[in-house]
Amino acid sequence: MKVLLVNGSPNEKGCTYTALSEIAKTLEGEGIETEIFHIGNKPVRGCIGCGGCKNGQCVFDDDILNRLAERVKEADGYVFGSPVYYASPNGAMLAVMDRLFYSAGKYMAYKPAACIASARRAGTTATYDVLNKYIGINHMLMVPANYWNMVHGSKAEDVKQDLEGLQTMRTIGKNMAWLLNLLETGKANGIKHPKIEEKIRTNFIR
Image 1: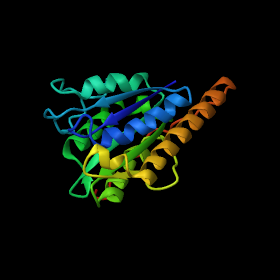
Image 2: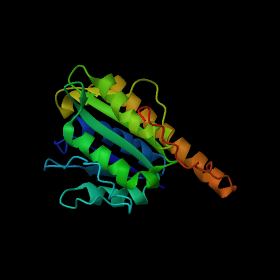
Image 3: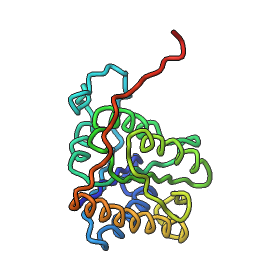
Image 4: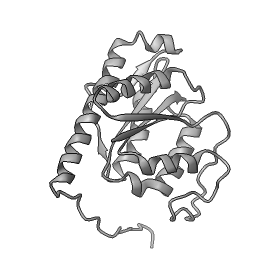
């Protein structure tokens, strides 16, 4: 089993990476393979709502999105991490999440996922709420923890001193491993996820 951890920070080895690494270390201790995927600091296109991604790939192939989508198909669980910019996930991460869930959402359905936020001080719960909406709309299983999924600090060394935040990250890792094992056991015993109804779309202006 494998968990893909997405680092949405432009800084490859900063605060968000430090939090994700704590989760990855815990997962590996539970026998789960991990990969941390850095979205980088190059420009990322926003979604234009063209609907051309139904083949599992975004029509725009000039940034990291489709490479991430390929990794998504191979994973059994996910962790999405973002720094806080103006009390929200940073713009590049939001662009990635929009296009990723449109193009590759079906490969993530019925799999466990968690979202984490990293900030110097505030905006973490708002960022956490935004990221969790992607999980909630996609038939995914939200991994529980013992507190809101956040770490604090201006640099990686600060995060390493946030003992409560790091404990929360380890709790995510342990609960993710537990859910993955439950799902694997269920699958081995013939338990399948519910059949998805055809989507009903209600428009309020007719």
